[in-house]
Image (cartoon, rainbow, N blue to C red; front, side, top):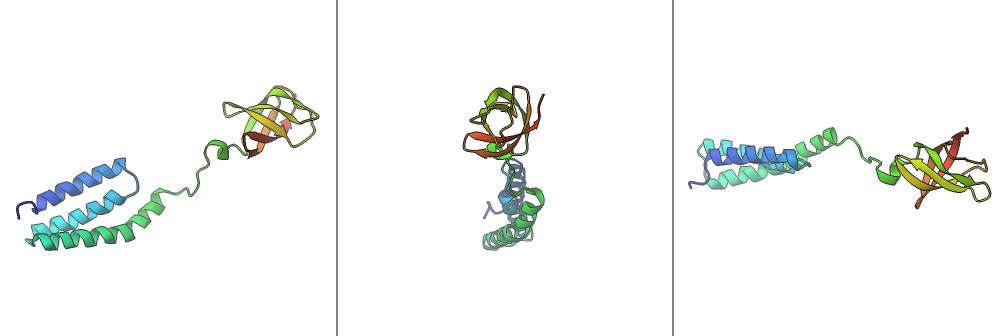
Length: 148
């Protein structure tokens, strides 16, 4: 069959390896490995059935053996904190005085202005430094670092 020549498989392997750059996850890479095996098989003169069989076998083998190793090597972070999850531990400044009785005010953290509650009864004034202890809904729970 004309379609199952080695250079078609090699071209498909090259295309899949290039596409893997744009689509992370190493799935297309595994298909590319299968295409390389099928290309070698076609180059040795085997028919379409053997080519498809080796394409499938090598793709599945790569998917279950090579892909987990690559995923572990290149995706090192199990959980990367973003948005509100990244706020605890960050420092900021008080942007609106805290009411000592209610312990509520506003703080500037990471370029955003947040509603905040202080864990101490210390009066916090505009410009005081704070540290975010945790996030409770849309309110930051903060503690004072220093006062002016």
